[in-house]
Image: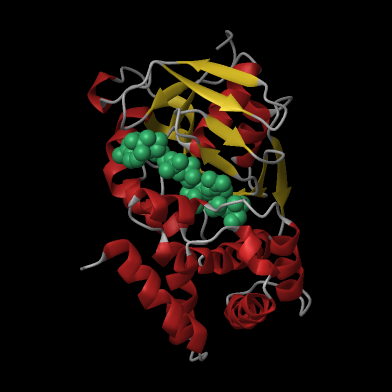
Length: 298
Ligand SMILES: NC(=O)C1=CN([C@@H]2O[C@H](COP(=O)(O)OP(=O)(O)OC[C@H]3O[C@@H](n4cnc5c(N)ncnc54)[C@H](OP(=O)(O)O)[C@@H]3O)[C@@H](O)[C@H]2O)C=CC1
Ligand SMILES: CC(C)(CO)C(=O)C(=O)O
């Protein structure tokens, strides 16, 4: 970090956290890295094979954090928020901006119990990144975030200015967040098959995906998202256009036997649909199967 630059920390140095830490490091704004597994450094690779090594070490004990910071990026899974809370207590003062790099539309509710009083910024994370067996992260697209149009977003814009991670702000963040949620919800079908994006080339899967997305769209609109009738087909087309081996973070968790973000990515549609009296027959089938795949028993 250069003098005068804001002090930044990244909590959760996995696929997304490593990408953001690397973007900051390339701009000489190396963050404090806080994780669960001790490591000497992080490594990001992009499609060109170029590697960025972010010096660590990854800190694993919140009690060793001496100072609060100006900005914390939190990139743990929605299932890991409670366990990551001690990092927030250690890193956040009353003015620290916490930017949540997670999928879902409920970041604010999820993090509210752990607030130190500073602004909490949800985000939409657009890029795919995957953890590789050697511990490096493969960034498989252009890094880009969308934030709500609030004063606190300026802190994130400044921290990531001139880096490989583009940031835009949306006046209608609700719409953007639900658009992304629809993409994530349908990606949940990949967990049920154990297959990657190539599976959407099947016409029966594309039809199911379309029907599921139309259901999600109705709930999204009831929640205030201004999304047009064309969105479900556009999302199916996006999945059909991806490299067939492109995965999704929830499938990576399934393959690794880790807990799944089924509630924040799929359960939310069922819950919100029920509370508004909207029938969700596909969610009624998909959500219990994802929940059982993630949480068992059995
Ligand atoms: N990967 C992707 O392409 C995308 C992911 N997202 C979303 O971004 C969020 C992060 O996903 P992703 O980066 O893939 O997840 P990862 O599993 O790759 O990363 C999570 C990181 O958090 C660490 N962690 C777990 N618990 C704690 C804790 N208590 N304290 C500190 N660190 C902890 C994990 O440690 P350990 O190394 O020990 O597991 C891991 O390094 C999710 O909400 C996901 O849905 C959004 C868009 C794309
Ligand atoms: C890859 C992407 C962007 C779409 O599913 C994602 O959000 C994830 O993997 O969680």
